[in-house]
Length: 401
Ligand SMILES: Cc1ncc(COP(=O)(O)O)c(C=O)c1O
Image 1 (cartoon, rainbow, N blue to C red):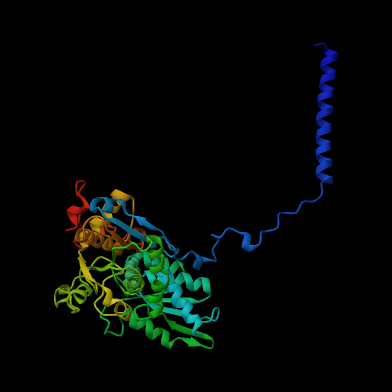
Image 2 (image 1 turned 45 degrees about the vertical axis):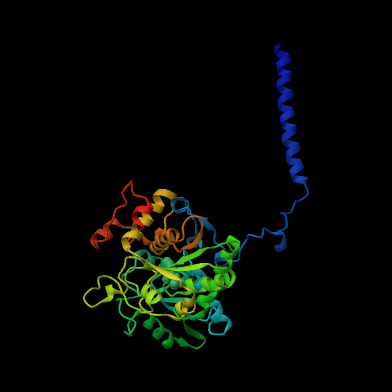
């Protein structure tokens, strides 16, 4: 290429580039203004957009627990309640108790009104979360021996947390009694104190009768041979049981009860008595178990609402619950809390009693994350002398007798 030709080419390229820049600039300058797309009308939006945290509650999946199903020859299904936004099935209860109080005019948002509750933790966390979302305060009275992460969560959610020594329900300082008393003395002007009272409040039962029960019915197309559940307040067991017994023929209901709880004897022999509660025998809790959330030594109205439908009960030891929780992680990658582990032990026992080919439903109430410093802590279990190891060879049929 001669110098004059390459000079001409360079000039051509340069002027071409300059024209392009100029044209682009002019075009964007003159371009008619484009408006951002109008947001679509709500009806046209995705139907899975929900309204705040309350919209995330419920409609939890029902999961097949593969290891337990394969070991027993039954289909063992766990309702994944740990997926609720507050981390447990108690979200449903807290939401319904607060809604019911609003409907009856007891609670008005943004008036300084406060929801009081006596709880071992999960219900408190759910109440604290929903109270925030709806413009209330939460005041939670709890026994002081629960897993530390529950108190921490409550504080982060802005609740007032009052810890008390565990004692009998006949004591005025028992956590439920104290919550009731605090609520009765609270209030000024428009600000009211509402005692949620999950043990006796029918809105607890209704949350499960109206939502959890029908969800399970839909998810299984009504094909359920057995429902297996533990009980604290009894709201979950009674609510789901009453709905399903009305709609599913020949379904059996089994109570899963941790050691130290009196409900097992109440169901089997109509006597509320746990040998570990005998004088001089009591070791750690009101209910002598490492399991939190289920097991109780009194008859609540919410348990009584479904009691007539309970066919039988299984007692589950701490050792079985601990092994089950470790087994579910080892086999299924499923990390659950203590009450869910009790439910799964009892589900396997139900499967053994019924034989292969049956469909058994239970609840996975909360995740192991809420139990890291107690049920899931080897150090804690060793200090309490209840440490137990799942050996690599052990299968579920070895440790669930
Ligand atoms: C984690 C967990 N699972 C299960 C239950 C028992 O449910 P219910 O009170 O409906 O018997 C509770 C009760 O507090 C709980 O905290």
